[in-house]
Length: 248
Length: 37
Image (cartoon, rainbow over the protein chains, first blue to last red):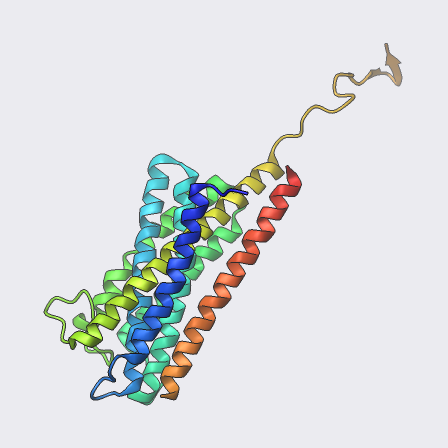
């Protein structure tokens, strides 16, 4: 039995993603502990890659939404849908990781800080995006409406990211994508970049499978709504009935 | 240490759950499509 090159490359991508995650876990646990926070700071290697992937995923949703509206090709809607779902997963993980990191450092799991609140709002906006998709059965109508929300929703990302610079917050300034130099020791930075790379690879692998699911679901919808073929008896016209008697 | 263990367990657990759920949805949809064809 032979498999197609596409399927083989997908399998290799899955294997690489799993290996990447295992290597990232090894680096995260074996890198020297941070001087002031100790082991809770190891949450950095999860929290930063997952929120990075949330940003990437929602920007990809934006790109898919714009491309769909411009071309009306369903493959772009599949891209937007898949990326939003994976983005919600990574946002949820980033929020929970942040809460677990916050408890030993801040003394509380949650506070209504600008960064935390805006990230929670972003999470619920994209949960709403997925919920909106569930309410519309017509694929074109669903894609069009979802694309509008996919475009509008992305404006939250710069607000979430720069909230720690624009407002006084309990949350620390950004680790990546910050206006000045990053202040982090090289071994910790290496573990962080390995985590970012591994989670990005995982995102790509998950996207491939989620887009495949979207394609199958569209094929199922098309099969269910396709007009039925001619059946026996279609060619026979019904007799006309006039004044209670049939006219032959 | 317990906070890091909790965080890593929950994260990797959530990822594993999502992968298992995605695989099950793919299998189910693939089977339904094969039945229709």
